[in-house]
Figure 1 (cartoon, rainbow, N blue to C red):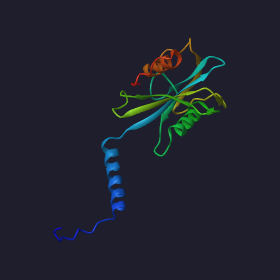
Figure 2: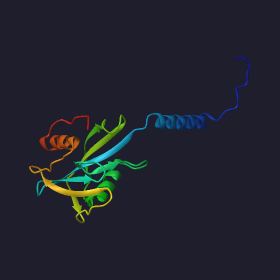
Figure 3: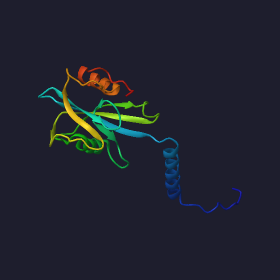
Figure 4: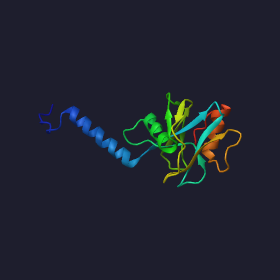
Length: 166
C-alpha cells in the first residue's frame, strides 16, 4: 500500500447506479431501438382477418403500432386494437414471431401476435389515423396489401417458418 488516501466518492452502490443510468442514457441516445406490435386478428367462424388502411401510409396493414416507454407489448397491443378497430381481447393474444423492420429504420422491431378470441364493440369509423378497418376473407384479400403484411399472413395461415425481416 502506498499510503495514499483514496478520493472521496459515492458509495459503491450509489456509484454503480449512477454509472448504470448514465450508460443507459448514452446507449439510448446513441442506439435507440423502437418496438412495435402487430396482430393477426382472425375470426375463425367467418374465416376472415382484420386489416386496416391508415391515413398516412399507403396499403392495407395488420393493426398495431408502437410500444410506448413504460408499456408492455401486451398493453400496447390491447391499446392499439381498441384505437384502430374497437377490438377487445377476450383472452390473451399469442406471440407468434419477432421481426426486424429495416424499411422503417436500422433499429425498428415488430412483435407479431395472433388474436383468436375477441369482441368488436362497433364498426370502426374513419378518423385522423385510420381511414378504414375491415375484415376480409382469406381468399379475397384487398389489392394493395403491404409486403410485410402479405408475408406474415402466409406464415400464419400456411404455417411457413417466420422470416426475421418484416
